[in-house]
Amino acid sequence: MEKKIKKIILSLFVFGLWVSGANAAVLSVSPNSGFHSVGDVFSVRILVSSQEIQMNAASGVLSFPPDKLAVTSISKAGSIISLWAQEPTFDNNAGTDIFEGIVLNPGFKGGNGQVLTINFRVKSAGIAPVVFNSGSVLANDGLGTNILSGFTNASFNLAPAAQSEEAGQSTTPSATNSFAPQISSITNPDSNKWYSNKKPKFSWGVPSGVTAVRLLYDKFPQSIPTVAYEPAISEKQLENIPDGVWYFHARFRDVNGWGSVAHFRFQIDTVPPEPMDIRFVDTSNTTNPTPTVIFNTTDGGSGIDYYKVKIGDQDFIVVSADTIKSNPYTLPKTKGGKQTLLVQAFDKAGNYETALSDIIISSLPAPVITDYPSIIQPGEIFAVKGTTEPLAEVTIWLEKNGSSKAFTGSSDSSGMFTIAGNGSALDVGSYKLWVSATDSRGARTSPSDKHDVVVQSPYLFRLGSYAINILTIVVSIVSIITLLILVSWYFWHKVIKSQRYVRKESQEASRVIHKEFAWFREKLRHHIKSLEDAKTKRELTFEEKKILSDIKDEIDKVEEVVEKNLDEIKKDLS
Image 1 (tube, rainbow, N blue to C red):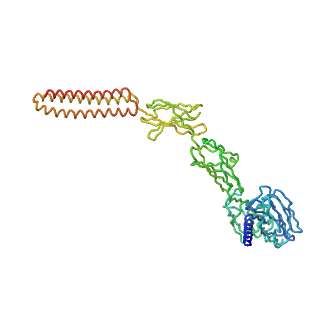
Image 2: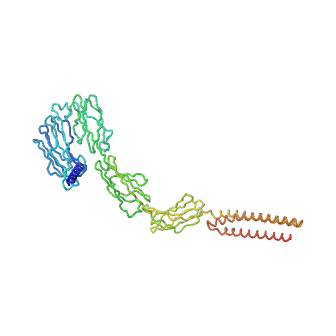
Image 3: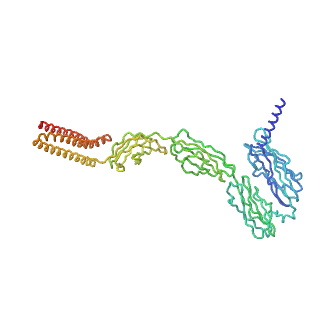
């Protein structure tokens, strides 16, 4: 039992340490060091940092050596404190500053939240510590949990008034040295812009005769630099600067003393905007090609500059932050099917946050074709009728061997359409015909069923071709009949001279005649097959049907005549 109690106490202790570390908050004095001279006035800021949990109250008692420093004023400008439970006060006799304030909901979470600014005047030389005697930072958890984990104090070097000119801390430049450094930056060139570079670099030219330079960076636009470099340097790169608005200060010294102070503002933001969601407004209508969406986010540093929107394989579209503030946003026209919507939110330093979502654009029902021509002649005006979406743009498609021709029109308020096409745009051959439509919103239908259409030559051209074929057949028939008559006559005379010889030769002639006639019949069947093949693809004309019938009849008649003549020859020889 005792071991279990020890384990529980140990677990609670470890848990307490973890909670303390996770919820750590710090009160600090900034800057935490510096060099000043008697008579100078300088400022320090009281800051609070609470990176892990929202805080809603801070208090503290600050002490300073009253023989060396005196508070001239306390400023609440720029403070995160919304309500002061005790107005900030100071006592120059006791050397104390006291403050206690509340941050209204939702509280404050982050680093370097400004509580107040204290302005000191240097009374005497020496070391002047500015430290917290006590303090608290309360969590916004409804319980007032103190999450303060420590303090960051400050200590300042104070020079005698006689050393002020030599030390370079006079706020008034020498009468004979009033020039100031010309500060520039290759990493943060524009003081009004934000940058994500945490290592800003500054440079300035060093004129002849300058023996030293003093530098400083802080949150105050008019601070006096305190860090000396002798001989004078011409550039300085800072490291790991926290996000925020900062000022870089520089001052030259020559034989006449210290000159004017140059100040350079620089702004750093390395944190991307807050995560965002994409929400579609009308999820019930999936056929709308321009859906409306809501997406918005915030940025605690430099602020949102613009958005970029990309749908599927389309190009990025840049959208201003003001446009998105007036949500919902209507997307550009999107093709049907499933697409990926990508949204990027950029802050003014170029950091960005990305969100993704799928868009599914459904097709409208396919048009229905109610009437179309199955045969078209080149140059002929034809019409296709059907039904589709009301007041839609309708397109007729005729496809042959992968190449398509299109004819367009529109449907009426009831969805009926009649689209005319010109056959002169079509080559002779077989086509597939179908219809598609696009409604007034730009939504597309599925394609209609496909139908077979034949584009054929005009009748006179076809008749000439058929006439040539018929003439060929007739000439062949006449030639064969003439040949048969001559053969028959020849063998008849041979029979008269010699029946025995003729009988033998007649048998041979009969074989030859049968062979020649078989060849002739095969030729005719080839022509007949051409016409019968055409009959399977389309309906034959009246003339074509008559030619096919006549050829078949002539074959039968010729075959009958030949057989009859051969039979008579055989009887004469018997």
